[in-house]
Image (spheres, each protein chain N blue to C red):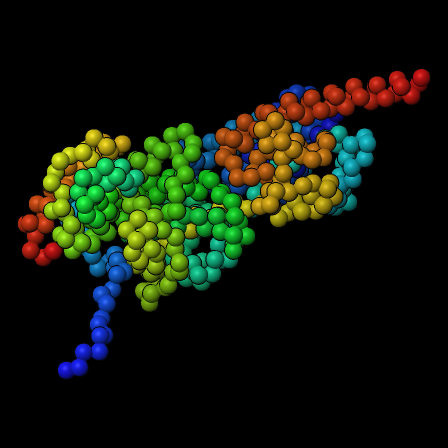
Length: 351
Length: 112
């Protein structure tokens, strides 16, 4: 039986492992943490429908149970690539072999502390969108002083479209995440005022634009175009922000009880070893390079090594699940051709 | 006194917390479609008043949202309510009604 190593146990890895296993391959799913689900474990609700994240997570978990070898708390230490396939050294001196590798290693969340001028980790009431989801999961959003915030500002593009922060790319999901979170907050605290500071609103997906309009019309959330220059903490622990209102072309200042930074996606730092061992190519922005963006988006420059999900750039869950289906065919096709080539080679050697 | 040519510039910064935004709140009650505006500027691009002056409904709505009401008072009567903007708006904002109520708000409010 042909074996496949899926590296990464988030949405991409879980869905692909389930599908590959269903196709009859022997699948090993390698996850570095102690649970499957990746960053979905930290999320409360999904855009644009605001469906509970746990619902999708549980759906994925049910599918993964079909005879897959799941290795938790497992890290890849070294990979050898030879003619027959891959030898993968894991931590605790374990070793597995695979005929193909699927990289489903996902992304890292931008460390908001790098934008020191925004005060995350310095001021009391500056949080990230990830921390806000955590608060939603706990059922209450409070300031550090324990008060209910009445005036909240969201800052878009934190660690995205920012070359000095090392991320020139657009993380693409934060716009709609922000709009979704703003609506959730407004519903949670109906007498609050919410302001979104954006550069562009990239409502690219189905029903995203409707969500944006709902935020404006139904929830009276205000959208102000401009990028935060710096934030200051007042003595009462509120946060003062300074932004140019670019559509009016005048500087603006505002005090808020809570400042939410919509942090972006960046290339995963934990796969550099794998990239080195397999001699994989990266894009300029650091995400894995797809062999052909249109015609072979799930292949890499190395035959037998495939990539899906946010490892090759920011993606939504829907896109990632789609890719998991598509890569299943690509891997099956690759393994079949490999067998065919091998038989041909052997026949030739007999002559 | 000798005139040295010095003067004090007024502060251009929008102080969001100081502003009351009473005009915006008033119009929102009279014409709720003001909330539908997404600042695209289609209204202003075909505006007759905008050809001859710096009048822009997009800007007026934004100024109302920020509470910069002095600038509204200075500009809002440049509009003669022709209603071209009403045809242009892609979101169906009742633009002429907004301007009408903005003019009424300015007329009726002493504190502006």
